[in-house]
Length: 282
Length: 282
Image (cartoon, rainbow over all chains, first blue to last red; front, side):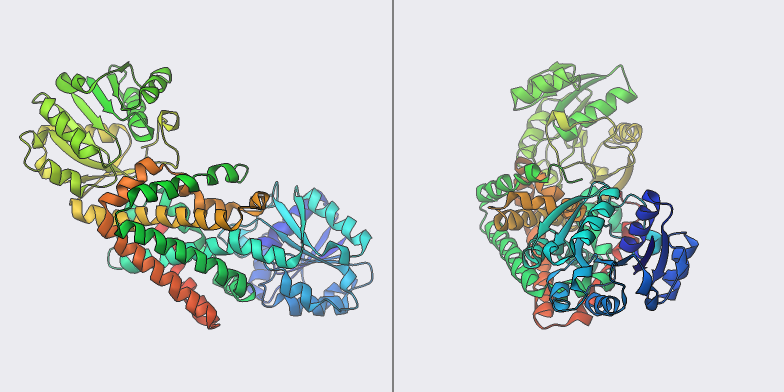
């Protein structure tokens, strides 16, 4: 099987490693805007060959894992080039705009829109590891628009990577993911910003930070090149949930200003319910 | 050595287990407002005996780990009862009000104000474990107000638990801890509240949440009985940093509304600096 991976960072690189593990016969061509990333990915044996975009023309599988602002254009170029039986998957964190971008493309049936709920706060080929997708969920959007044999092929691949599948329409995907992923990144980035500003002259104060701070601020290490485009593409959903978050924080502040501690207690107690819904998430 | 642990939850229980590990001769008396917690702590062999507060009168060491709103009163009662050579340590997350409460107590020199930067989102005796304090920092406030031989005794105990020591005045402690701990809890509780409200009719949506959401919302599992009093006691510092956090989130929202993605990128890139300062925190 000839596979082209476009974007050899955390997601693309881990996908390549997982694929090689399940099928040693596979040959992986890496394509990336960064020559440095490509060389690194080859050194790390994540990819077998570095290649240009035209390489996709006789690929069996093309995996796109590039920032979501360039993904629609890359996908269109890929669909213009691929052979009839090729499966093209993109793995970006937003799905509405990419589905819309190729809605009327003659090769739409070659494309499967997916979003693996997997990742870390690190990026680039060095961050890739075999096993990233093990036990994780992948969301597939508009499955009915993908040719049936290619759906089957994709499911086989995801199964071999150890993933569970959920189906969703792109609009519902983008809305729910704004709630359970995109908002977390903003809360974490702004928490990091707030505390860094406050402690800018006292860097050793971070010795005092415990695992709680580390946990809430972890996502602030994430790549701006990946995340700024996600916020852009999912602007309306992100604005809506961010506004509710700010309202809740302001409400908490008002309770504290007014010494309403039993109400603060009650809000926290109700939110403890998150224990139950988080069971099953690592 | 006769030790009384008042409050046999996560902190008190873990302290008792650590102490037993380093000195099997120690005998630990548990004191707690909850009879159920006491029985549980005894069943789990965290404490040797259950006891009443009067038990502290001939103790060598008294460790107080109760919610910070009751700690000052408990501490005063303990200092009224203890013998001249007894060491009394409290482990609460706020230090200014407790230091102020016993400032003029005739037994002030028996007291050492400490705050171990250690914990988890769980509470109660079942959450206690040996090793919680290993490699962690404890902050000691107003060390000069504790009798020198009792300082030495306390350092020996913390050293045996594997802890590093930092000294700080109570006001600086409460301010910095508001930044690097208390704010994280509010951001996490309100994130949990926001998403739970949004998804209240779609509970299975949390299948979509990845490790990023789990990480940022983890502290929302924390005990309201512990945290409402902390926010109360550290109200001014918490209000100040919470206001800055809300301002930063509102600023981010404005950037997003105005499509200023390069500025969003720049802010995130600057905040990535947190990678460096977090090195060393787990």
